[in-house]
Amino acid sequence: MCRNARAGVTMLYNSKDKFGLVSKGLHWTIAFGIIGLIALGWWMVGLGYYDPWYHDSLEAHKAVGMVVLALAFCKIGWQFFNKPPAPGKTLTPNEKNASKTMHWVLYALMVVVPVTGYIMTTSSGQGVSMFGLFEVPALMQNSESTRDVSTSIHYYFAYAGIALVLGHAGAALKHHFVNRDDTLTRML
Ligand code: HEM
Image (tube, rainbow, N blue to C red; front, side, top):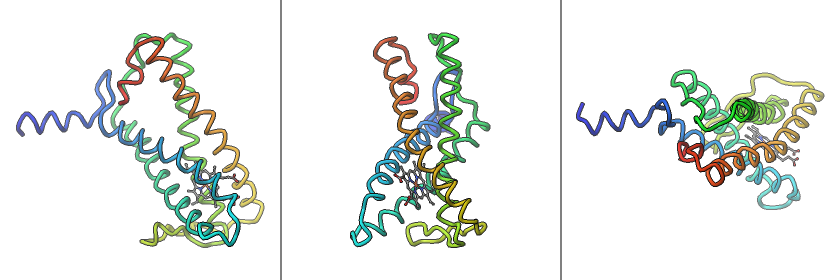
């Protein structure tokens, strides 16, 4: 393999102190996906039944949400296959613990919100249409109470996600502008 090709392949992987292109791509696609889905979800539930966007916005929300779920599984799988870099050397022990906890909570959010969306949508036995191309089948039919519980979890976790995403982004910006370390730049 020529040197350029080898360097290109190396850039895909995390190194000891930097994230690789796969981690960065998954991180930002999921981040913008979640922010977009929260905004879309908030907007669409306010639409009237006869609004021209009533049906299409919900279908788009479900399909994009399933894509985010698939990417979240890819991100979790990739973490096992290719270890992320160690936390920055400038982080205090408290900051290291806080960032570890925040990452676990964010991973839970990435999985719990779309899974509860899937459960409530498919509770009647109907699958999720993926942009009209194919359908993700319903795995089971659920009771009304299961649907209600998943709807509540979907709602509360999604809106709690706003606080988490803001806290996460705020911490990264604080490190960049106040501590002037590489916490943010190594993910850019
Ligand atoms: C990370 C992914 C997702 C996020 C952040 C998200 C976020 C949201 C938000 C903020 C709402 C509005 C809640 C409200 O104000 O009542 C909503 C509603 C909804 N979401 Fe999601 N969602 C995601 C994935 C999914 C998936 C994968 C599905 C289904 C396959 C789904 C199905 C729905 C449905 C059916 C509603 C309307 C609920 C109602 O009418 O009360 N969502 N979502």
